[in-house]
Structure formats: C-alpha cells, structure tokens
Image (cartoon, rainbow, N blue to C red):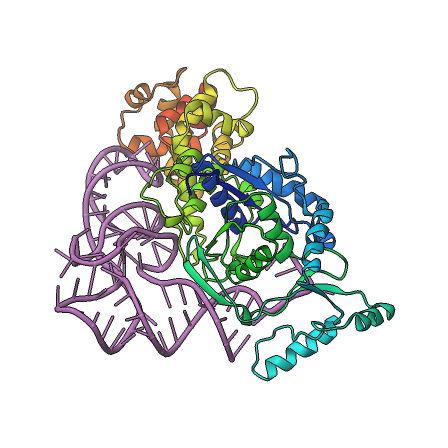
Length: 464
RNA sequence: GCUCCCUUCGUCUAGAGGCCUAGGACACGGCCCUCUCAAGGCUGGAACACGGGUUCGACUCCCGUAGGGAGCGCCA
C-alpha cells in the first residue's frame, strides 16, 4: 500500500454522540492516511433523516477536531467528491440504482414488514437461516403493476447471484471466503426512497476513491454483500480491515453503565486529547513504544499488521496513566495555559508559576489542581481531622516561633532555626497548619506560591 | 438454527516452529529516595482456554471441544 495515494475515511452516522469505539476507528483511519501522506475523508452518513439530529452532526465534527483528527475532505471543507453528506447524494444513488435496474440486478419488493417478519419466524422455527425468501424476485410486470395500483410502495432488492464465492483479503483477518448462497437478496433502497447502508456506504467509498477502510468487526460479514454490489457496478472496492470491537471491563460492548464512554464526557472530565489518543492508539493496536506519542509519531508507528483481532477492553486506569504522562510532559508555559482557567485572575507576578511548579507533579486532572488552588489561595481553609490533631500536638510555642520567623519570601531555614525542630517534627505540623491536610506537594515550593501574610495568619491560628 | 470472527499475566499487548525457564506497559506488592503524598529508581507476584494430532521440537501449523462476539434487518 505504498505506490498510489492512500485514501481513508471515517463515516459516522450522526445519531448519537461520538463514542470511544468510533473515535478509535476514526483515529486508526486518520493515522493510516497520515502514515502514507494520503487523504482522510469525513463523510456523514445521514440517510436516515428521522434519526439524524443536526446538533449531532456538529458534535461529531467538533469532537473529531478536538481529538486533532483533521480531515482533508468533508462537509465543511468540500473536496473533489462533494457533497460529503449522504442526505445530499440522492441523485447519485439514483443514477447507480438505474444502472443496476438496467442490468436487471434489482427488483421491487412489495413485502410488508409484517409479512417479512412472519416469513423469518417460520424459517427460524424450521431451523433455517432467516433469509429473504425471494417472494418478489420473479414477479411479472403485470403483478408489479397490480401491486402498485393497490398502493403498495416497493423497496428495491439486489439480486444476489447464486452459487458464487466471494473472496477477499481482509487487512487484519487475512483471506476470507463467503458463499453467495448464504446471502439473501438484500434491500438497497428503502420504501421511502432512501438508499440503504449497504449500498450508499459501499458506493460512496468507491466513488470517493477510498482505498482503505478500517471499520468495526461487525461489518466483516457485510463485506461480501458490498463487494457484490460494487462488482455489479464495475467499481473498485476499497481494501477493508476489520478491527475488533471495544468493550467494557465486563467484556460487554461499551455502554453507559461502564461510566464515561463518550469523547465529550471524557473531555468534560478533564482528559487531554493526547491522553485519550495514546490510550486509543494502544487498544487493539500494539506498539513497542511505551512513551507518550504525538499524533505524527503515532502515524509513523501505526501499522495494520499490528492490529489486534480480539476485542479490547477500555481501561480507565490506563487512560489515567497517559493523562499523567501528558501532565508531566508539560512545559511551564504549557502547564500555565492548561491551568489558567482555574487560577485566580489577579495573582501577583511569579505566583501562578510558583503554584504550578509546586503542584504539577501531584496532579493528573485539572480538577486536582483546583483543589490545591483553593487550599493555597482561598480563605477560610478547611482542615481535615488528622491534620488538626497534628497541628495541635505541635503546641502553640512552635507556631508562635514559626510565625515570628515568616518573611517574604518565606524561608524555611529561618523557620527551622526559630523553632529548633527538623525533619518530620518540623514539616508535618507546618503542613497541617498551612494546608489543612497531611498529604500534598512538597512544602517548600508550595510556600513559595503562598503570600507571606497568609502563611503568618495560618500559623498564628495555632499559636495560642 | 446457519455463516463468519475471536481466545497469551487482572487489563493493553510482544510472539509469524527452536531466540520462551513466554518479553514490555498499566494496575497491584516490596525496597530506595523523602516532611507526607505524588513523581522517579530498583524489585516481586502474575498468562499461552481445553483436548487431540503433525514434528526431533509447538504459544506458534492442523482438527476438534468449550467459552465469547458478529451477521443473517426497509439500523447504520
């Protein structure tokens, strides 16, 4: 896959928020395109008007953009194969439908949902695969006309050839072979005139020049149908690679009860795109590199050969690890940009830098920093019980001496001399009185961020 | 029911017949560092689903079994 330009695509149906599974699929396709200096296409599969919500189209786009997965062609930028929304491609579908009709490869089906359901049940009961029985396959023109007169609107079915084998190489599963006899005539245009997924999806991939598609495992057995369709149209199918599904900790498909599983939810929870992408990158894909990777580095390391065939479990603990890696990779300036929204706006020069330097090794989400921001900058301070006890045990004399030695900036060595204590006996009461808790970032850097007046006041509180 | 897919430490995975007394990462335990926590360094426990073949030799190949998943939709 090196010579010609690689074109991949992500084709979400905007019927819900961008899910982690879809986000990973998008990432893989993006990475594959970037690795080969190819193009990444975004196509919105909104043929089902009833289920499409305009806000979702927006949301998918902004989630993708937030992830950093920029597309080269899509509804908003246009491109050589516009339009990129299936709801606007009806004329194109019609044109290819007519070609199939001319070749007698489609036929109208007048069966009602009820009739189909009854037939399916009968087949199931008889131990047969529930396939379309071919009721309308051989209707004469007269019979068709009669049904139309009765007011029955037909769907269109593709005439699946009998007794042929469909063979192809899956990018991740290797050689595949399906018998056409296991496939019933399937609907390619619905009664309401909308193109059905199997048709519009395959046709658009071919028409848009898509060369490689990484998609969910659940499409593997759809692939022979789509190949049949494209073959009938003399169009070139892309190479498909079917990636394992993403599941929750219990092995069941990711859903609400697994906690936050949407890109938006994770973003709102404070995770960085780098963290999410790094975790997704290693879910169902392996790499020898254990460090935090940028998107270009991921593209370089990405390889369809390293795609896993078994389902992968989404693991919040590992996501958290990448988030922590990301936090620790931040420069002072970047950290400042990240934490700026939670810092008090009117801080004297140097103080926010001091605060960030003190707190950064201890936090993973911005929320953690907010807690320390309150401890350092807000009044009144709330004390945890064990901290209160430790402070009281140190005795008033200790705090009186310490408070007397507070200068600006606060010099811990001066306090040490004044109190005559060292080690834990020195630090722990100070920590307790100043932060209200027994655990936290190193005291010296933390003090550097705290105004001297506040330090003195908090010490004095225990001086009598 | 039929067709197809999958199965290595708790999790993500390396492994393409001998390099495997199965490697790495996350998580977990211990030690070091240390005012605490975190970070960091070192370290420990932890897996080839099962049963048959093939082979001098199988995690790797073949066949079964078990378990999980998908498809068989006028949903995408």
